[in-house]
Length: 114
Length: 114
Image (tube, rainbow over all chains, first blue to last red; front, top):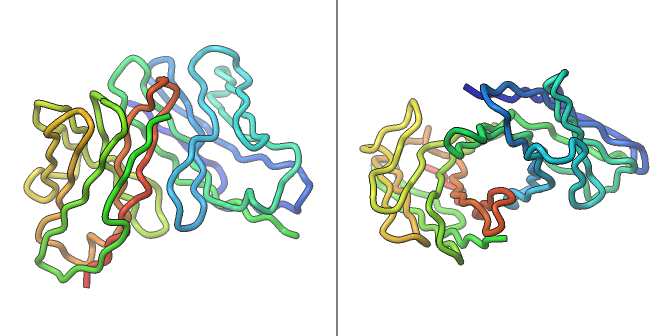
């Protein structure tokens, strides 16, 4: 069984300051892990994906995430927040050796303070 | 990455009626997935649709309520049957992208049942 826990339902940061969105996972096998972003009234967009290559994964729009097996974590970071980053972020896990079913976290709403 | 066209984008329906949602992928894919996103919540997998076989439903979802068709490798439909206000949600389809990097999502169907 696989699961993912997003530790914060809402994060607020000032524009230009770092962003940290936290995610812990549980998986029976070596997982694939994703971060997706959902802007208001828009579809889901893939930010980045981990698949057992480099543990530090770089994504679009300056986001990156680090896979830490010992901590079962896959936190999303960005050095400097921009107003356009305001959105809902989902951490997602897939059992790489099982079916391709995705399990979504409950989401973190990121608010950027001008 | 793959592009998915989903329609309708939104609809308001009377209780007791049915709505069929369509998804067209711009490339052939073996598996397609249907998700529900209830208001203010995360995505929950409804079923996995493979071409040429019956869909596989997740716990809590049944074929009589959410019949799925998968007539070919680029197209799928989800029907929400005998609708009630509790079915008001966003419904999304998904498919693996061409490069195998992640999963692409349709833009979603926002359903309101009155």
